[in-house]
Every structure is written in C-alpha cells, then in structure tokens.
Length: 161
Image (tube, rainbow, N blue to C red; front, side):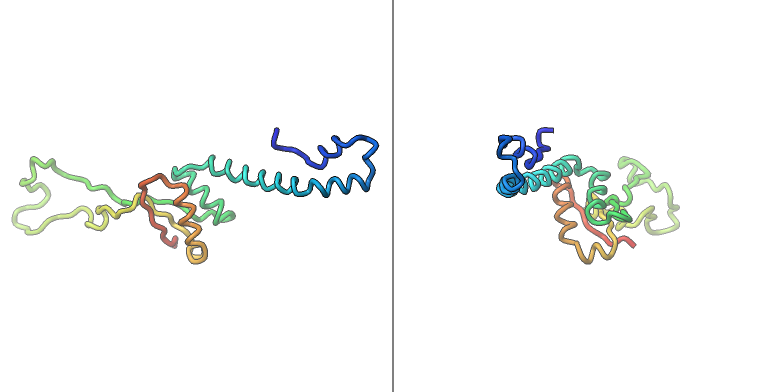
C-alpha cells in the first residue's frame, strides 16, 4: 500500500549511481533516520486508530477490547446485564383489586421477586473483572469503557469471583 514505504531503499534509489558508495550510503541513511522514525510512529498510530474503529460499544466488541487490553491469555473479563429480572405482572391494572394468588384468610402480599431483584439499579451493564486487574488497573478500565460505551449508558465494575 501507499503507506508501506521503505525509506532506506527509497533514498538509495534516488541517489545517482556514482554516489552509491558504502560511506555515502551510511551518511544518507543517517540523515533520513528521523523520517524513518516518524514513519514508524505514524504506522503504529494508524494501526491503533484502525483497531479503535473496528470496535464499538456493543457488548461483544467491548468485551473483546477489554480482554485484548487487560487479560490477553485467560480472557476472564465479561459483561452482564444491569437489571437481573424484569417485573412480571400477573394481572392487568384494571383488575388491581382482585386477589388471584392469595386467599383472603392469609394477610400480606405475595411477591414473586424481591424489590432488590426487580428495582432499577441505575446500571445498564456490569463489567466483571478478576481481582488482580481490578486492584491494579481500575482507572485504565474506566477509561477504556468510557471510550467505547454509548452515551448515556451507565455501568459499574465488579470483581469476578
């Protein structure tokens, strides 16, 4: 491609043939060494940007980006839902006064799930990470999640046990 340039070969090809002596080639290659260094840094920057463009805030891509960065070998980072259960209504609101599951002889209300299980936790997703990553790289985790997550999404990082 156009960005794969070998600066040393380009300099040698641009020199007239009568200047292509070993000392002159070494001197010219030392002159273009800063340009070669700049090209190398630009190629790394380009690869990093292409990687960022390939990954989005979708859970599968976010999990891959987190595992690629923090847990390359074991890939123990995963993402769960923020709310564990949705509220299930047994009767429509029009029948609110009608008791279906409980006889009148037993006082109290029957709950299918506790309020903690169905309440809005304020989280859209939860990132589960191993203890050692949580202890050493928590700020880098937050920064990477903030970079990839969609705007308005709420998250928290928990320790995976």
